Length: 352
Image (tube, rainbow, N blue to C red; front, side, top):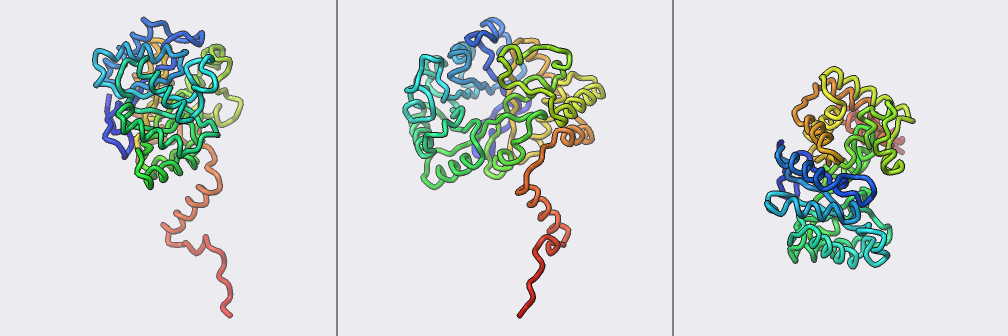
């Protein structure tokens, strides 16, 4: 296991993959019992992992409770991240959900109790509620950082323009900075290439990448009629091969897997690790296993090295259109680098 600082705005050192604890517990009717969750945690820690990602609502609070028990013996070794927004369960209602200062403060106090700790290393706002002003979120983050109850703050599943605005606002007002962004990203879902990843690169934000296997589609298992997440979550976060790009991507993953004699999971994760190595900011895939066997199989990706040709083949198969803004900027940059910027500009007007 290698270690990185989380983005260019912190000295927080984390392992190159995080352990997502969304399957710790069975509160959703699908997940891992305590012994299996402990085995996954022990396997991850034994491999050198130190970055744990959970949320107040995972498994109705069971995830935080288990994580708190598991890290208690060596709390300071782990970088502990959790989230607020959705509440710990349906009983939380309006007063404990959303992005408001009230919801944030209540959630953090409850999370600290479940996690059995005096501080959260990284607190994420889980989702935007499209109502709470960004000023309110940032000011509450700042109070929590100053109190020592959280050390760092980040935004998860927010649009790039809101994150960029929050970054500038916190800087101008002297509030605790936004240090990271969490987003879905994999060979099956690369829309973050359009705005989120260029923004994270420019601002020096760490990137935490959830669903690195595209909900399982990159393993090729759905071609064998395996139910997996499709059955467990009623299709939530499930990706299929209905579009040509995803089908071509799965084909490419399976082909490279055959070439390197490794499971497709290794190839999909190894591509993300290489993508991080080529980026200007650190991208941390969040592994979300449900069994120890799944964890052990995924960790094998840490020793797999793709050739430049294999990396590029996967990148080309999975690429998404970047949109007019980025494509025009790339064309302009290429023209300027080639010494022909005039080809990209309107024709000169006649001089009177």
